[in-house]
Amino acid sequence: MKADPKMKTDPKVEAVAVTAPPSKGSKKKLMIMIGALVIAIGGGGGIAWHFIHPSKNAHKEVKIETPVFVQLDPFTVNLQQESGEQFLQVSLTLQVENMTQIDIIKQNMPQVRSRLVVLLSSKKASEIASTQGKTNLTNEIIAQINKPFAPTAPPQKVLGVFFTSFIIQ
Image 1 (cartoon, rainbow, N blue to C red):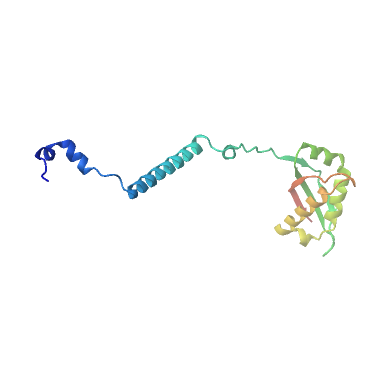
Image 2: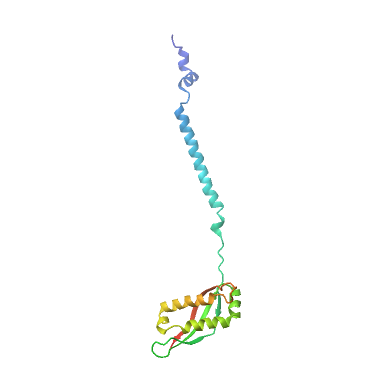
């Protein structure tokens, strides 16, 4: 059989002869590329969504409560003897959780003062003169005042003790 000379010069014939059906390997590559494209678009969309609509936790307003303080009248107590008589004169301020705690403490002030007099008068000057001694005393004061004033009452909520005057003689 002889080839027709027209077929070689006809562009339609050449195009048909060159084009072959796609192989199975190229379909796999195409599917992988489409899958990667879908993942990339989805990931980019997720990141964009995160920046456009940030989570509720990211912008929570932090409410800073104003500290609530109650100042106590000064205390003067005899300290435990080490070398002669020694006295402690101390003024302190309590930080409490809220205004309700101030009312509870003021209503029970005789118990508060009694607890503190007993605590303070049980100390030696050498125990409370140092910074660590004052820190320990602060923790003991908080523990004493936080004890409920009545058997069925809830404990108080004293958060801190601040010495405004501290004199040992």
